[in-house]
Length: 191
Image (cartoon, rainbow, N blue to C red; front, side):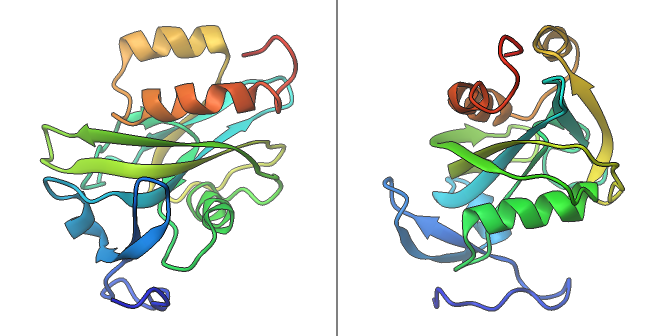
């Protein structure tokens, strides 16, 4: 398959993801759903962690209508770059599309690779994930097809919430990997 595949022009067009090797080098493309079916194909992804000026993390509850992990809480935004799209551009694009936020700047805070099967859907998250953090000072205009709810939480509130409600299978992996870099972005002593 071509690595210069065009962006989907309509919802009927297949969404292609970049397949990568364990070092994150692009080795091909695959249709999105096919890449997530058992046994799962390692592909490029991104995760965004936005914070307010006080250092509270913006969480997103995924839309209840999503075919994968509906209604669970997770980081601010996550997704997949299109083939040939830089991860930081994809992360900014999807954050704007899902949350309607315009005023933010993303800082790269690492990468992480993980393999998380989802027993409920039968899908697999096998991702080479680029991590980004930033500060946001903007109102949101949520896309209800993507986001059911949002909330800002402190580190203590996040710990309690993770004991009370379901989170995405990938959240622990991306959060722990991003945390050292997050601490360089947010106010001291908040995380």
